[in-house]
Length: 565
Image (cartoon, rainbow, N blue to C red; front, side):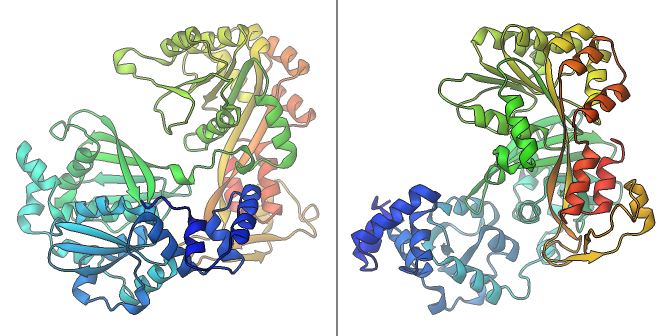
C-alpha cells in the first residue's frame, strides 16, 4: 500500500484544493460517508477518478476497460456466475498469469478464491477498474450467460463421476479436489450467495442429487447435478469444513470461511447420514449483511422505546421466542452490541456461536464433552459479568441457574421455542420452575416472526377477497379506504413477488398484574388477555400494520401468524 490519504491523491491529481478536502472531511464527520464518495457526490471528481485514486493508494495499476479488447479465450477461463458474484473481469492471460480487473482494491482475496476453480492458472495479477465499467464489461462479454451447469458438467469425465462410489480415502480426496467438482461446488455456493440464500441443502436420493436454496424462508429447488457426483461434491464440502471425509456413519458439524466479492462469508456445515449418502446443510452467515442495530430490526417507534427500556434493566430475565430462523439471535446480538462498552462485561454461551462479536466473551457449548448451557452458566457467574446471554433455556437446570443469576443482580437474555409471548410462561412452568421464581425474575418476553416483504419493483394494488379478509378476522367495512398490495413477480424477485423479510414483534412487558397471574399459575389465555388489555400488540396486530403499510401481503401474514391468534 502507498499509504497516502485519498484526499491527498486527489490534490496531487489537480482535482481538488486543500479547502475542498477540509469541507469534505467536515461532511464526513457528520455522515460517516467515505471521503471519495463525498467528493464524487459534489461533482469535484468522477467515479473513474476515484478508481484511479484507489488504485494509486493500493499501489496497483489502473485499467480502463473501455479501451481494452478482451480475447474470447480469456473470457472462457472464468464462468459467468463467478465474475457476476465477485464483480471482477478477466482481462489478459499469457498462459501462466491471469490479469483480473477488480472494482475494489480491498477485494484482492478474490484471487485466492479463483485459485480453487482455476487450477490451470499459475499466477494471478489484479488491476483496478471502475465499478460501472466492470458491470458493463460483464454485460457485454457474458451476454449469452457464460458457462452454465450443463457446460460445466460436460467437462466432467466418466472416471471422476464414477469415482464418487469409492471408499478408498486417497480416491475420495482426489475426487473432492478434482477441478470439475471444485467448479461445480463453487457455482452452487456463488449462486446461493448471489440469490441471498440463507441455507444450501445438498440431498442425495436413490436416483437424484437435489440442490435446494432457502431464500426468505422458502425452499427453492435448483437444477440437480448428476447423482454420480453426489459423494464427490459432499466430500469436497467436508474437506473445506475440515471434517473427516472417511466418516459417513455419524453426523458432523464444521465451518467454512469464504471471501466473496471482498465480503467475508461463513458457512456453518452440518452433515447427516441417510439411506443414500450424507445429507449436507450449509447455513450462510454473511457478516456484511448482519445489521446489528436495534433501529434496523423493524420495531415501530413506540415499540423501540419500550424495548430499549426493557433491555436496559439492571437485572432480571428477558426472553426472545419464536421458531428456528425467526431472527432471535439477531435481535439478541443487536441488544448486546448496543450495550457493549468498555465498562460493561458481556459473556454469552451459545450453541453454536454464529457471529464473532467484538468485545464480547463468547463460549461455545460442547455437549459431547459435557459442556452444557448449565455448566457454562455456572462458570460465567464466576467471571464477574454484567450482562449474560444464554443461547437457549432447554431444561430445568439451566432455568434455575438463570433465575439465580438474575436474583444476584445480573440481567440474563435467552431464547425459547414457543409460538407467542404469553405461552413462554407456561413453557417455563412445564420445565419445573416454581411460579414465584418466574414472577420474581421475568421482566419481559418478545415473540417474533419474519414475514416476506412484497417486492417493491412489482408491487401492485388489488382488492382482497372476502375469504382473505375472513382469514384476517376482518370485514369489508373495517378495511374500507385501505389499499392492499401483492407482488406480480419480476426479475428482481425471481418471479416470487417477494424480496427480503420484515420482522413481526409481540412484546409482553411483565407488570404487577401479570406477576400476580403468574404467581397463581394462570393459563396462557388469561395471560394473553391481560397483556392485550395492558397494550400488548400481538403478532397478528403487527402483521396487520405491515399489510396496511404495503410492506407485506395478507397471504404472508396469515401464514406466519396462523398459530399465534
